[in-house]
Structures are given as structure tokens and as C-alpha cells.
Image (cartoon, rainbow, N blue to C red; front, side, top):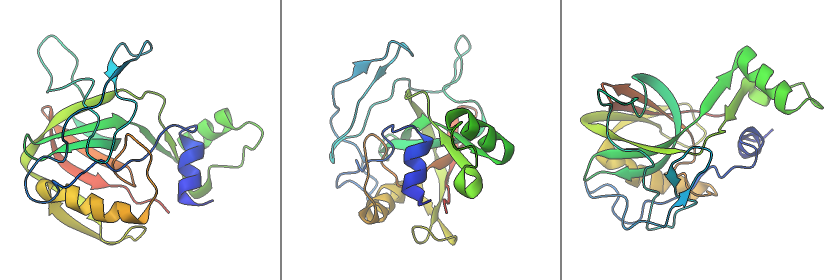
Length: 205
């Protein structure tokens, strides 16, 4: 099964990818300008944005780091996400948290969603995205971004956060994207004390 087909099946037809970087990439400016109208989600109780244009990205449903009387936006550690917005002026990243399942966990979820065709998933991974809540976290000034040198390849290179919008803009020319995501592939965010210190692009066969 091709990678894009796998995404469509894995997320149940949800909007997966979109380009929203505009012309601010790679020069230390913001990758987002303006802001689309929001929709209120009854299931999550948060405001979300149904999509983004080439000049805008979705604002976050939640912002900032953890506080003493609230749950953290994202727990410390390494988590898979779809990127939905990059602000290289304010040093923030907006994202949609997903589940990236492999092995037995992927097989169990596949059988649950596809009882008529239990022999899956292809390539032994499955992406699950049942909650479209968008979140925003600050990014460390020295955060590193590990990305694929070529789309679909296994070689990687490391760039700074300020260079990530330009990299994604170039990479996205090779793919068809659907809002609100702004990257062809999922990313892993490493969070320490409520701040993103590393972003890693996930290889998909």
C-alpha cells in the first residue's frame, strides 16, 4: 500500500496534511500571518480551526507551558504529532497530537477498525488521530530539527528551527497536502519542562 493511502486509511479520512508557510520561511520571521476563524468543538470544549490557507496557519486551542494548577499542554518526553503552525519569531510550534502505533499495538487497532480485513496494517505501522485539538508550545532557542535529506529517503540532516519553514516549503512541493497540517510527514516532539527542545521527522515507507 502506498504511503498516502496508508494515511487516509489510518486517520479515517481526516484532514492530514497542508502547506501554510507563506513567504516567511528561513529568514527568522514568522511562518504564519493573520488567523482564520475558529470552530468550537463540543467533544473537546476547545476552539479549533477547520483549515488554513497558503498564508495562514491554525492558531492553537491551548498555549504556553504547564502551570501549577493545570495539566501540561504536552507531557515531557517524546510524542508524535502533525505540525500545523510554526512561528519562528515567537519561537512556538502548533500541532495536532496523534498516535503512531507499531507492532502488536498497530495490529490490534487495525483489526478493531477493519474487522473485514484483519491482515494489516501494511508496513507494520498505523497512525490514529481521533482528537483534532490543536496545541501550542514554546520552542527552545537552540532546538534542533532532524529532517529527511530527501522525501522518502532514510538519510537525515539537522537544521535549526528558523530554517524549518523553508525546508518544509521545499519538501511540500513533492506532495499533495490537506489542511491544517503543514508537513508531508509526522514529526516527533521532544518536550522538557513544557518546552520543545527537538523536532524529528518520521520516516514512512
